[in-house]
Amino acid sequence: MSILIMVFVSFLAGTLGSMLGIGGGIILVPVLTQFYHVDIKTAAVASLVSIVATSASGAEKFVRSGLANFRIATFLEMGTVAGAITGFFLFGRLTPKSLYFIYAGFLFFSLLTIFKNKSTSPLSTTDKTADYFSLHGSYTLNNTLQFYKVSHSVGALVVMYFAGILSALLGIGSGILKVLAMDNLMKLPIKVSSATSNFMIGVTAAASALAYYFSGQVSMTLTPAVVIGIFFGAQLGTVLMPKLPPLVIRTLFATLLLLTGVQMFMKGWSL
Amino acid sequence: MNIQIILENYFKWSMRVVVVCLFIGLALQALFKMEGLLSLGLGILLFIPVGRVCLTLYSAIKGKDRGLLILSAAVLAGLAISLLIGLLFKPLE
Image (cartoon, rainbow over all chains, first blue to last red; front, top):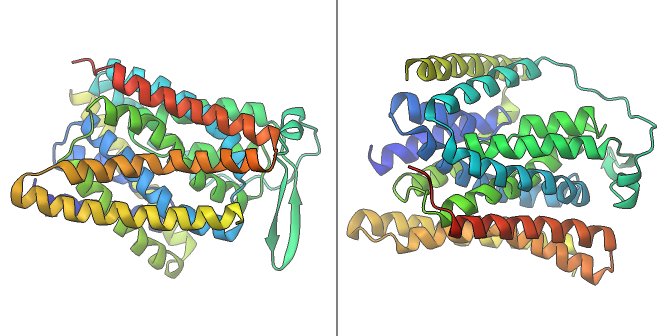
């Protein structure tokens, strides 16, 4: 596959991924493995590096908006980094067949979360860990300062460990798991949880990507093209996203997850 | 200077450097089969989050914020371990 085709395919994946509010990796890895017969491990590592790029380019916006909570991000990154290191060791031991099944399982799980109602009621329980690290915060909504308290921070840290493992294995940012944990366990406002999740995805991906890079597992042919394609695709997706109605986005996302999930399962089954 | 402004500029400029390196690197690879700049571009890219954690650590030290200092030092240690295992462990074939 020529460099230009790789850039183009990644550009489309980045645009679509960004329009749907997810990273391009969850789309790119199935496309590369199914249609271009790229090895799943090579595709996952390339996707992981591209996640660092999309997160770093979006981070500037999240920092400026003041929605991302640095303290919560750093606290949860302890879990994702530990998970990513575990994932690196598992990656070398798992067969492509099992990776296809894990990927399909994750896509089906993501499908279930799309139509789930977001938890909005804040809990009044006290959390000593959150108090110690001063994780509680505030953000501005309609020119009013809104305060929020954090609960179940240790539980969320455990979920982050598994998010880190999945990120290292599948080449994804695991944003779905992160937002779920921040919404349902920590009871963060949705805007804060999605901004914080996007902000911390870069560190999660970099934790395993650094190990892959220094152990020589990053393809110098595929990865740069994927990074450039996804990076620019994501910029276009951000512009296009507000123009699509939410129902269309959800339906498109659900169809995509279902199709790619079935395809990944079938591919794993056929190996 | 405020840590928020430092981080904003840090992300903006580091990504510009990476994109330029990758673009020129791809051209050099296609024309002369040279991979040096691509490798450098990807290397800089992967160290952007590490730099961000270092900046958080710096702000924690400057602000004498013990909680944030512990958190950012733990994350930085994790990233250092990741880098180290990448250097020490080769993939199983």
